[in-house]
Amino acid sequence: MGEGGERIPRYDPGMVKGEGKLHALSRLIRVEHTLFSLPYAYLGALMATPKITLREAVLIFLAVLGLRTAGMAYNNIVDLPIDKLNPRSAKRPLVTGALTLRDAWLTVLAGSLLYYASAALLNWYALVLSPILWIVALTYPYAKRIHPLPHLHLGFTLGLVVFGGAVAAIGDEAGSMLALLERIPWEMVFAVTFWVAGFDILYSIMDYDFDVEHGLGSVPAWLGVKRAIWAALGFHITFLALLYYVIIKYYMGAIAFAAFTLTTVLIAIQYYIVARRGLEGIPTAFNLNLAIGLIVGIGYSLDILLC
Image (cartoon, rainbow, N blue to C red):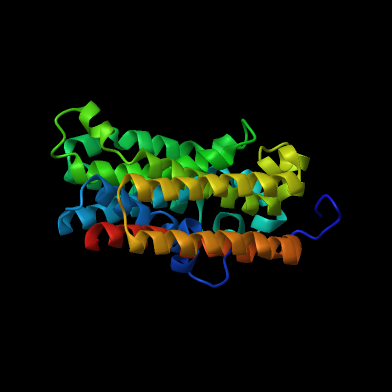
């Protein structure tokens, strides 16, 4: 129950609903959530240079897929003791036995190999910097055991996808590491960071009781549910401010502005849903972010390519 006795939903996109290892694997890595990150990888590449090759585009996709696969599988391994205790995560593949720990470790290995191989095929700087993104992604499950802001860790993990896309696109032509870092669209890196942190705060409200009881770090457990919603809103306002700044700084046009406007509307709808339906509206509000990832990533990318 929430602070005011309100029922908290137990929505979990990682639950196993069917039979077979393929279905269980899809729930382990939640491949559909690639929509949160992949569009931003391409946007990062295009913001660094409007010219990327088909080869680079394919390798960026494979790198993102590999890193997400490794990160999600490892997260499930590390969190298995917690997931066994949490009623909301009781139907995840490793908890139900639909997948074994050996399956999960092989998935981590396969995803990591795909990620590093893709980075190596892209360029030297992509390979040299690739361990940073890998370490940030795989250390995420430890964050809630250390501090109350794991949402920013997760956000930065996805924000670095923008960084990775830019490095993939311009690493071959960068004369030095400093020259490379100067061309990274840092505004978009931090915009994605705050966007993800905001919706992850809303998502973590569903674990409020469990986190408080077991001493796990989250903004809802730290500040309470009502203040957590305000904190999430603050992060999302920061996200929108950075999105608008990107339009100004990079001289973007009508397509990007339309994407920004629609994103603003969807962010407002998220909080309207929560205000109107209470905590029961959190799963619906959370899933609106799948659309936001596509709208911003594709909208801003099309603006670069067409305007």
